[in-house]
Length: 260
Figure 1 (cartoon, rainbow, N blue to C red):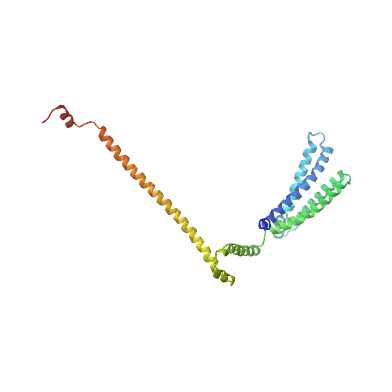
Figure 2 (figure 1 turned 180 degrees about the vertical axis):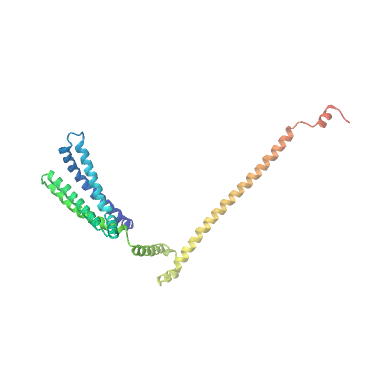
């Protein structure tokens, strides 16, 4: 159970879940902004405030989602494009976009605080919003690093995991070793474990081969029984046809008393 929880995959999915929660929180706070604006400007449209509130929530959720999950990819692309074009206005525009999203996040939680008229709940939501703004940056950075591990680190982890699993699997065979073999393993000789593993592998292969042989033998015996049965049916059919066939002309003549 601990091994299932304590692994890299859980960390990645947990960070991704945290990013979705952050995006959902700011989308939830953006809905009152759109709804309030809709009451001022779209009061003559049926359902206008609710539609504008949903649109504001959707836009805020998408923007925060981009900041958490795609900001580093976008930053790398824009930086490289600016370098190749020798025009860093693209990179400045990207930075302004990030500040724009940050300002929208703050405005959404500040407006929710305003609607609650500075109550205790309003202060709590404002504090959570400010922390969420920080986590938008932190989670995006950490998640990007975890998902895009350097090749050297990934190779080292693969080697370590292979060695860890080799020793873990080897422990399962210790109880099958003799005292002498255990002493050899204690001295640093892993060949007894390999011998046990190879023997088990051969046993499995032999068992599979024996099962195939028995299956083939059963199939051959069934085919032989079917062949004998088919021949017996053929002889019975031929005998039946002989019995029901009409008598020959010579036999008819003899039956009528005509002898030559």
